[in-house]
Length: 354
Image (cartoon, rainbow, N blue to C red):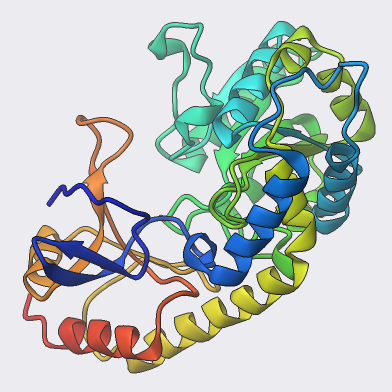
């Protein structure tokens, strides 16, 4: 069912005067409807205004950019960070910049479209179906091209469980000879040390170079993109015309990020409590794919989506990123859900007859 709503879809959605519980979306920490978090954002707007459209290379520099980027780099465990107006822009920026360096691109299974070049025919953006096929292709390429470093793109959280938390497919690749670009949009703010995402874990796998891009909208509730990497990589990116010509991240969003440390910590704990409560009270033979510590529980049974809807529960279920793609269905818990919400969800799931 596709519906329009008049406000942000929180834990409940009202449709034709009927209330539905909503277990979908990507507002993992429930920040968008949290009164304390909204007040932080409004305070930041009072200080920084509603938007800042000048170049980051302008002669007038707002200090929150550097402060927020240093904070994020320390949180994630990277040498440096830069922020942009969106996660999608961050991915496109990397793809275009690395293409200019004449690297060959390889895409792991289920890589997000944000990392695909948009200036080349689709057939040049081939996604490998399995990591085994990707491994063979990369090793063959390295055997034929001794001097050119390949770039492998992948999503940290791909909802199949193939990557996070153990990255078994990634480990079979010749990482010491690869530049690895990872989209961590669904992980940062939710998983990792203090919500720092996957950077530290993957760095320990010793790729030739690790670059992580992401949206901060899902885990941190702000409209901002970020790129993490070495000081040299970030410096080179910041010197490009692309970076200088693009409008920056909203300073109010970055101010909220820096001021919201306590709220983020509290909400992450609430989310983890809700995940464990859901798993404890789920008593069914239904098969969900999920990753330890992540609040998304994926499934392929379309009848289950219909059944949940009849019981006034809506979940994420649509074809993504286009109508030709497979149906994507998943139950998403958030820090905003109450124990009663989860009790009702479990009651309905436990009664489902497949």
